[in-house]
Image (cartoon, rainbow, N blue to C red; front, side, top):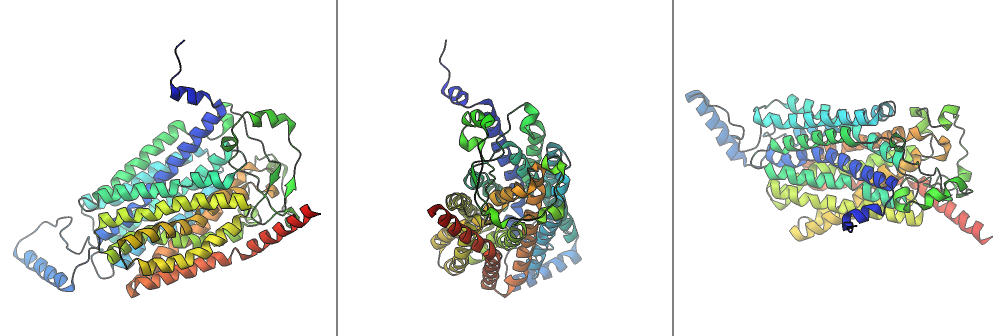
Length: 528
């Protein structure tokens, strides 16, 4: 018998269940990376939609246009304006570009609250596929404005609003799918790795958009639109919503010791002897992704009525029922301000680099990817620290506390040269995106599988949508405020970001105090 190839031999080391879980992990990673890939082009193309030109040049160009119009009919070329693409070539271009961001993010925030509730009542595969195909269409639609020489602001606003609405199908769907497939364990670390799809998508979107931005910026939107549409087809062909669909074993419902976000006290459970053999046959990292982590159970005496259907995980949770889960409101409001900072960087960083470093749109787009590289390490670091300390809120608070001075240093250092800008991009990306990544993944999964839900597995999508939807309100406000404030100076934009960062930290103070108090109580309990 011939020896197995090394790759096939490696695959045989894993069980059938582990292989399927690894496949779903990678597939959902790629699916949501394509969502962020399609969101990024607008921030890269801003430098091309409005090019800096002297006031005298604008007057001369205007006079030349009038003369040419009177003398003979001239066909208007797509890039004839030296100041950019009409209507973004005027002095109020920052407000107009901010309106593009706001229209997308406002539609995204409104749609997110409904998306989680709808997603729990529809097949995930169909729901996600339809959203990705529609998102591909509306992303490409923005680029069609270049090829069809469209200069109407409302055309671009409608494309942004429609894209914002359909993109809300993504996050609740992939988080729910991951929740169906993976069990309970080192949630912070593993979901920190999984959540790097956000930064990977931003980086790929920046590189793809920057490749065509100077020559044919319409392709900066059309190509990402085609990519997310193709990923939607892959989703339809390969996404498996639940292990039961292919007779894979479900993961154990609980672990021996669990903790969570400063809302519960430690609790000890008797091991389930019937599942011990199954648990030992699977790798812990692959078997356990979503834990039942709970701290301080004595503080969790909430009176939430739960029906028999909810106990069996067959009835979706209501919107108000999800809000009653301890920690949901605090983390939602914290994410509002954390996402305000993150999305301001997402949509305005390339233009800021263009203005400060005097680089062209392509080089500024490439340089802005370093912020997302830092975000990858920040998300993983936040997960590791929160798992090690067993304190989600405290980990977020620590990184938010350090982010404010980092933002101030970035605004000061970025004017000193390219090398200093690169270093501060990495540091700021890690500290800004670390709490954002932890809240949208591990914390959302913690709260969506809270013990007060009595095992209702269908609450995760609604809880995730509430947290991310509230955060998206901040994501909509951030770029809008940046567009309004930036004419008075970029320093004022950074002051606004530092205030938002402080507000995010403020909403976590109660949970941080509870975590620290519960930790001390637990230590005293062990000593006695």
